[in-house]
Image 1 (tube, one colour):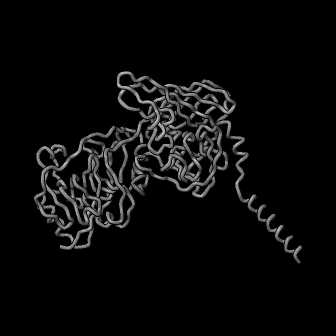
Image 2 (cartoon, rainbow, N blue to C red; image 1 turned 90 degrees about the vertical axis):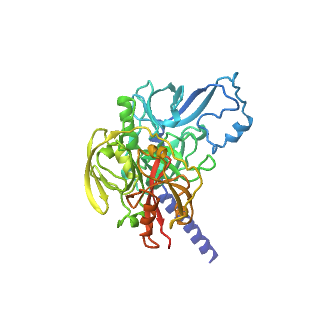
Image 3 (cartoon, rainbow, N blue to C red; image 1 turned 90 degrees about the horizontal axis):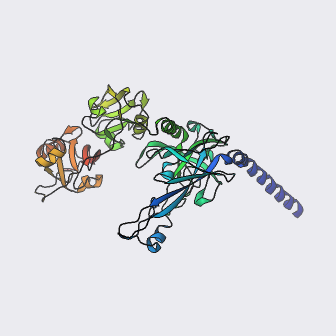
Amino acid sequence: MMHKILALGAFLITFTSSVLAKDLPDFTDLVEKQGAAVVNISTVQTVHGGGPGFQMPPGMSEDDPFYEFFRRFAPPGGQDGGQDYKTQSLGSGFILSADGYVLTNAHVVNEADEVIVKLTDRREFKAKIIGSDRRADVALLKIDATGLPKVTVGDPSQLKVGEWVVAIGSPFGLENTVTAGIVSAKGRALPQENYVPFIQTDVAINPGNSGGPLFNMKGEVVGINSQIFSRSGGYMGLSFAIPIDVALDVQNQLKASGKVSRGWLGIGIQEISKELAESFGMKSTNGALVAGVEKGSPADKGGLEAGDVITKFDGKPINTSSDLPRIVGSTKPGKEVTVEVLRKGATRNLSLKVGEMQDDKEGALTPRGPAKVEPNRLGLQLRELNPQQKKKLGGKNGLLVINAQGSAAQAGIRRGDVILAVNNNEVQGVEQFNKLIDGVASGKTVALLVLRGDNTLYVPVKVNGK
């Protein structure tokens, strides 16, 4: 009997092992065929001495594991006698074409004095930077070589969440390191990264992997590994890749002109929360809420207004606010487009000409003087703007928040904010503002259009009882 039990146990172990081996993916063929097209990129940058105290190497953040070491032990630079020194950094890239075009991240090569591309056969080439785009974090390099192994480009739109993917790169300078994982999410928007619908994975990505390819199981490049979420400087289970179609659009422009041209409207937008949808009388949270329109911008000339909800742009649906910057950015400047908006419950179509992206500017307003008014039903103490402050707003009316408490403070309103409108009704003064609030039933939500620094946003605030 014991022999039969042992035999059955051995059979189960063998059966389980064979099933697991069959179900788990095999990356060996992919790596053998595609690994030669992945390159190591090293850069050299000259940092000029000067200024008191130690200057941290460029690009090093406080999360970097070597930050504390450099801060404590590196030699300081003197204001008069500071010497120049060279810094080196490592990254990854991959060969797009047999004649030597290489794709990587912009942050790998930005401000570099020299870029060296090293192939798997140990050949090294000094690379020329054809162009780089910081917004998409894509750079195109060229090396003087022919007959090179190149990657096959895939379609990231066909990726499915849960699908296996593979990264090859040089983490910590360890060349041609292979790591694997799954697609965790698609179309991920990151703070301050409005133009890239990132592919989120759990593939182990570390410093040095930046710029390397992300492959699907067909051996096709579907993304460029660009960022990680980390509190320590190392891998913590979240990594983000730029979809290859986005990167190729950038590289085509870089190859043609050395720069990237993006569409621009001149608006501030925000996501529509459930509370904002309620305050605007909307049945869904789809669309991008226009929180502000720059005077004289394409949006202003086309008739867009703060409080409009953009539901379609040039025929493309806008489901979330993060969809809009990517679609507008990829639109050729000068193109006439139709924009579908929801305004005060009615749908209308506007026609406007897309401009070319410009840099942000302007200044901020700050409260001065003591508050002399009682908090209103929202918990706000407000004051009308003086002539100088109005001038900064282009002559518009606004109410300066002197203090915020109660439901306003809970909603995120703070001292120094300027309230421009209530439920799309422009504010004229403190008395008119309070009358508007008093006309709202207790427990209902109002949408306040707030100017904070250079940006405008709608903030939903629940109205308390009288």
